[in-house]
Length: 198
Image (cartoon, rainbow, N blue to C red):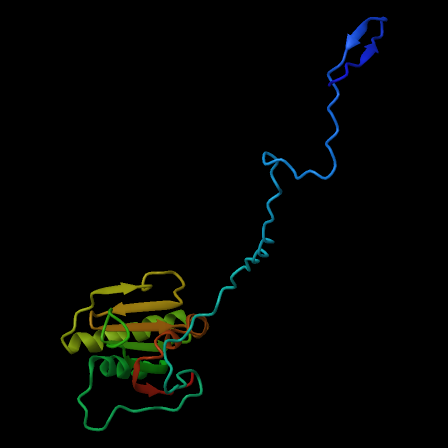
């Protein structure tokens, strides 16, 4: 039986309280309605997300490394081989005293062209003179310039001459060191290199 407790309010009024719950008899199993706490496996520690560091540009070559920078030896084209368009452009650049003139066969590496010429000039005036010499030599060979970039800039560091199957890149030394175009095309076949210090 439940017993009713009678309490006295603040104004002396009698209040009937809720019936007191009977104490649970000792030794009885818990009722089925009571839920046992579910034991869960400890959560796996959260992985820290590390900020990705900008990785340097990876070279695509894994074979023979050829030093194409300053200090490399001169490599002439194979004797008796007909001069390619790149070799004609490179010889014209050499006639205008360009330095570190490199001819690369990029057929297996780039979809833009077959050959690439990279050369350095010591100043803006020298850069334009080398570009003029290459344009004249290739015009005599029957080639038409499709596009030129950097020729009309006030202080160009890089002049690009596009002949379709041939691209000529003329740099000032600081820009060439900065862009390192030869490193990007390190898988290309080295056709020729002429060493001519500025």
